[in-house]
Image (cartoon, rainbow, N blue to C red; front, side, top):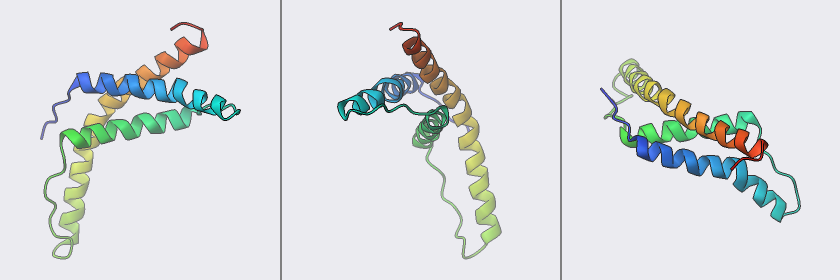
Amino acid sequence: MEIVIDWLVVTGVTVALAWVVNSGIPLLGRLFGQAWELSELVKKAVAFSASVGLVYFWRPPLDLPDPALDPFLFVGALLGQAEVVFKAAQEVYDHIWKGIILKSVARLFGAS
């Protein structure tokens, strides 16, 4: 089971997430007269969710066995699919997280 990743889509999602997380949320906060900044933990959660969602989109899970017939077989198949998705999502997460951090550092030092 190999997952083929479309890096053009990952780059587009990275740019969009970096803008929303680093500029969009603070801009929205300024519109309401408040200072909204997301913590690093929230930014990591956004990057993680996006990476798992993208990998899941590229390779939806196979049919799982009926849990009523054999729950252990069902759990084993579920864990096997989760392992494949999360292994591929790690590389996507690294790409997205680097994009979010680079945008955040550039914003911190006034570069565009």
